[in-house]
Length: 301
Image 1 (cartoon, rainbow, N blue to C red):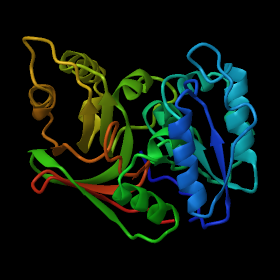
Image 2 (cartoon, helix red, strand yellow):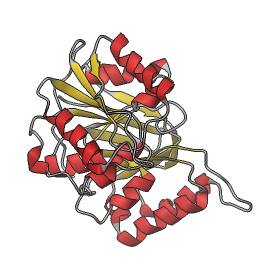
Image 3 (cartoon, rainbow, N blue to C red):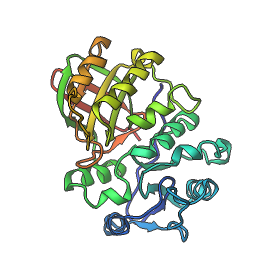
């Protein structure tokens, strides 16, 4: 993977478009809290009239959600797109999108979890970087530090971010940061929406996945050969990890499935569900230090 083109820095009073490309929006109080964070910052966050639509577990039909995304992306006044929530559904849009219909002007796409599918596909097909960061239904519950990191990064007020976790496998490498949800990423590899994984530092997180299911996904990655392409692996939060008895711990799964790769691995980094979710730019230059347990990165706009 090559470094991507990032959007320009943004400033208060500019227009932000909210969209719901994935699951149906039900957490309205949490959604309004996230909207308030943006508006209190001085941004003009616009909400489409039909954001509340639902079709089963989806926030409307594929056509409706795809149209929402395309209109926001092509809106010349909109400088960033804030996804309402994750859930499931953004990968279905990749069947509908015609990449040529999207403007070639880089624009911040902000979200995580299910939004991984759009973030990775935009990096692959458009060569543009987005931001793996809180969605609107989680932003209001973020600690002040990660909220500040998000806006400082978007507004060009910070040169670099260093996250501290725990080194699992030693060594230090520089590569291209590719963050995402492990379940979504596992379903994207070996498709034409997957970025080239050569020279990549893979940053992964997930929620409600038991150690044996994480084991199964990593075993699939081993079979595909993609793990051998990576420069390093940064592991965020794997919350609500149901543990059956008997079970390996999550750390034991990491060691068993990853330690023979001979690349630096850092775990327990502050990103993912159910806690601090530091912003991770998709496609930026990053350094992973397994000796000191850190992930450092910068965006050169």
